[in-house]
Length: 293
Ligand code: PAF
Image 1 (cartoon, rainbow, N blue to C red):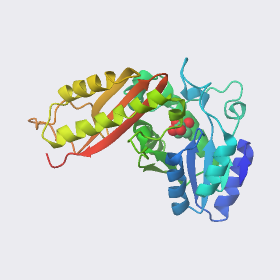
Image 2: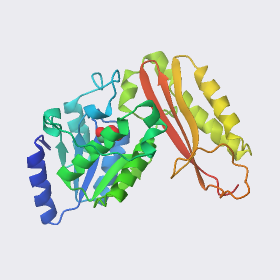
Image 3: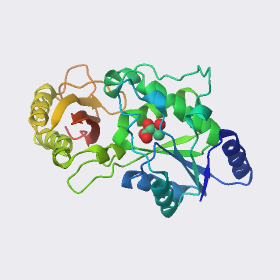
Image 4: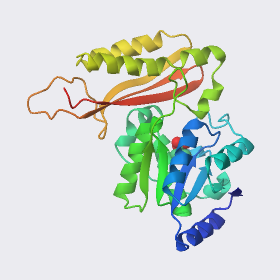
């Protein structure tokens, strides 16, 4: 399987694929592939005649002191995993080619990008949107596949595509989990044995919140506190960045599920959290259908 590194050559290839009638599915990644990525590649393989996986650790989506320098890298491993899963090409540009000297254009989805992960990582989603739109302009995908572990990222990219009339269909794919429920992530590699044991505490509390709501709890402020305390009490958890209940499309924060006069009852509730286990930041979420309330 060919690895293309030059954006101009990738553009040329994509144009020729499209004029030959192919449909292009893009799986954007930062590499160090895991089963979550593989599920995206397999879905793209089913939907599209050509599958391109991009591998680019995007410096502009990392803040100062974040893990850009230590983000795991292994091109040979990525290549064989991507090929086995059915990818046709890998696009792996250099930082210099993506951001040449004097690069000064950025894309922001204002509002959605300043809450939850955006509040904790200022500028993160601006970096994500900028690289994703560049990838779209280099690869011309018909469809692009994103994991729903990064749910806020998925919503922001969908909004960018809608607002800017980009001719690409954004597809969100289910979270793939380890046996104990931990959402798969390239960053899990950094967890020590003891941190790895603690890491599923976030998912356990998402499930606990779901169970309590299903059993009739509607005070989400109280529930948030309980879950945050549970997570904080777990060994190796240094910080809970957030544990939020939000409407699943607008990301409006929800404090109660009690029907309120003049307020429309929400249909889908996003329960999402971000925690720091040792030096590793983990995120996870689930969506709860509450139309029965
Ligand atoms: O989700 C990721 O791996 C990255 O944020 C993405 C979408 C590849 C952009 O760098």
